[in-house]
Image (tube, rainbow, N blue to C red; front, side, top):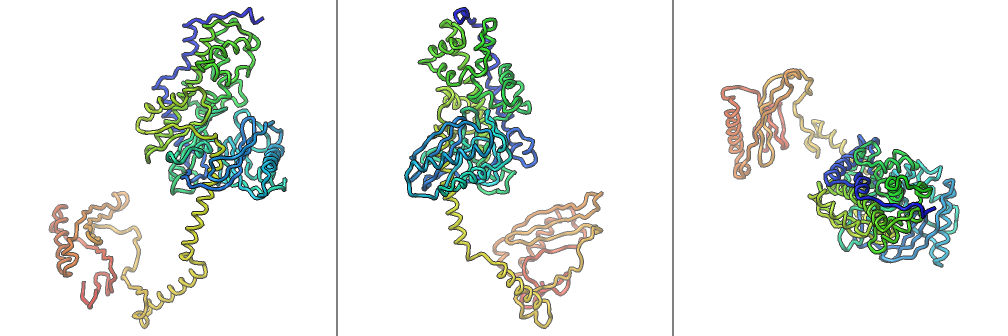
Length: 594
């Protein structure tokens, strides 16, 4: 039957079908601007819950600095497999094992399977060690409240396992491990695979603070200034943030960019209307985009295979875009679809696959540019890692070429991460261990400055005793707390009105102020002021010289304000200990009136 479907694709037909995938630089700039706006909504406490780009904090406060040491277990959950790693020494090498993952129907089965794989891996190591620290790579959206606690928001990428959404995946895994009762394994960190990618980069090349993953889906992360992550209490230093940008466009922000093929892929997915950005980039969906394009191109010549979902694989697309084996792979794929194609048709198939992959790279570049622009407002930009196995051989090159015009204010270097997220998860555990050791050292240093509640109670009692001595006439002279009267007998009640001069004497300068107090309807309190300096020779000279200088400045201020000849009450801020005998009279040293 396949021999009857001989195809000839015209140039005009190709151009027409691929036109929706061609995104101009101006279009990518619009995507970048919308992504940046969506990111900022996700960071804001006020709009976070409505944001399509969630910007989830990871509670990772630092990237590797090259001093990390230790031995850690890593459990890496993938789309189709589960990997267990052992990272030791300087965290540069390790041993690992991979198990095929059959998605269980219930949560206990999933986490019991993980715990079993961990124990079997440790059995194979033949180690006498029984206590281990574990980093858990979990590539799905989680709401983290600390480094070792993460509540699954939702499954994505076709992954379904009831009973996990809304629950702490660390608690579920720890419980399953404890039931094995063979090894003492403590889960110290749950990390998104994107964060693991960022943390896996070699620290010797400089800090790497942006991560980008493109595999079955797509995601990104970066080290944000903690003060901008309003959904957490921490405001000092930096905070790792996972963007969860796969859901960008779920609110319609990408409607003018989506092609008819994207709508068809979305309608045939497990979650229509969700993860719109990811469905244009992730490897799980690229095969379906290509298949729908082929259905349009070969209209009238379709076959049952071509109309069957899932028969065009992403791996086939990657091979077709390869300059060496691409045409041969294209012919093999077309034949598998029941189509007998010419050399020209195979070349056209290669063009289709390249267009789909290059659009994915362009959209990633727009998202990456949004992250860089956000970071560049505050500080210089470090290197940005791109994970292994890019969608096309020139993926990193395309990213680099497009990021520059999309974020011209930023300098960024794209580098390949090592070993995906596995090494990075161990690095997260190591960094957490290093920071914990630093905190312990700081706490020990500051321990001598800490006062217990009992000690504070004693200070309170002593201070109160001195205050009472200072208030009594017969003991005032012997008190260390002077308790000097000010002769201010009431606080403002809102009925005060009038114009007043005020002097505010500081260290090396002072202010002269004109304060006009009116009702709220008449404008409330209005203040005009000017700052005058106090020359060193005046500040260190006789008191009469200081006050003569102050009067000269008052006259200058009155002249500038057109107030000469006006008589106004004056208040004087004098920030030095004085013995007052009335509201407008004080005595300084030597019982001299000031």
